[in-house]
Length: 256
Length: 365
Ligand SMILES: Cc1ncc(C[n+]2csc(CCOP(=O)(O)OP(=O)(O)O)c2C)c(N)n1
Image (cartoon, rainbow over all chains, first blue to last red; front, side, top):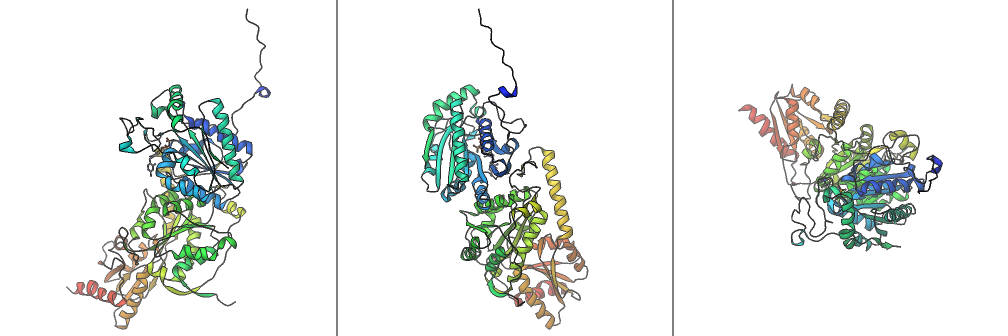
């Protein structure tokens, strides 16, 4: 005989978790299973917990994250494709008391914006760079990105990425870790609850570094793009673990 | 009080004026013939006095996007470059126009196309006045004809940029940038405090979302056609207002003139000598110098055209401003072009000959 369960009342005092105060009511345009939404939520939580909402400026990219400004209730600038780090550089130089971060996809940050990214890292600007690597161009309909894995099929590599034709997938995190101005480089993922918890700690550290003027912090999120990958959310998560993690291993790359 | 008069290069005047106009940040990349702007600023170290930020960027693309970031925060920011560098900035300028941000851009023109030459030219008139970047946008374009105007237009440029939340360009060239002249160093206004920024730009600048206001977003994106059209209509209304209120030009002996030269910047300087020369020889020649290339003094040119026997556009290019002059004149009188390209200059005598050849002789035929 089933034991009679004690009835739990649902009242605010009993809640162990709530919607982050800085997330707006706007329904996100992201596809189900996409990592962007979870990463947005973590950013909103960390800014809120740090009490920085009135001193933070975000820079959104051209890519699926372009509308980040509709979802996180802080001041934002929307940068031209790839130029977020240059935009953020001036903001931090002109407003050193502000928390400045960029939010960029892998096409934005490591294709068209490679120059701005590397030089901003090299100057050691005290900003946080949030890099969402889903190995594909999500917004424009699933074309190959610099980060697309070898053999991976995309709209512009329909037979799979061929290194003879397209070169090798680009690991920009390892590259910028070599630069003197860069303080903290970490690679995270939000595919599991444990991953989400670790990722949040990494974001907090990056934001704190920025406020302490410690140089540039770079947080990469190895992410899913189930629409671009043409997979269900569950299959995409599994594919990420099996194929993305071996090539883009999680963990700190530089932590000084 | 004694006037503070100094001997300066045009490019140095830009740097001096930047500091004295309360500029918050300059972002630039070296290119001849304007590198002295960045060099002078680095020499003067304004970050130790006014707190102005000066940064050598890795490219003109980075420079203009830094300007975008600073402008979005309500700061007085600027960049300078020469023709090839301005080409690289055009995407960024379009974004600044689209997001309705104020900034100052200085183009010390050199000859093109391509890498071209480091010698002076006025061949970026189309780029400055007709767009350069994509979309239906405008910049206010000021054309200095002296080192003093290089200095003064930095102040005016910032004022106009903020009054209309629009990118403003000083369209100079290698002649004005490199030559030395006396400059009356006039004003000295401080940088804006955070309170002043909030007062001036409190309804749009990114200053951190306070509890008492909605978040501010600097963006040029609107995926809904109706929203994007509304943005465009708002921009056009603003451009109309600027065309009504901000046209500037200068005139020399146009009152009784039979023939008119229209020229801007360094060409106008040379042509003003031609006017003196012609007057000595009994030819009633006048000069109209557009100071704002956009908005263009079309109405004034149309009025003058009604009583001229001929108009000559004198430009250091293949004939660019002449298109606007012809639109203004609307066929009332013949409009001819005289120019040189590739970094070559004309003398007042060359221009006088061109007036003879292109205006007087043609009429006799
Ligand atoms: C100058 C320019 N070139 C190309 C584009 C088209 N474009 C928009 S988003 C994008 C790629 C975005 O991919 P990524 O940065 O990986 O972000 P995701 O959408 O996958 O999150 C491209 C190429 C553009 N907007 N501007």
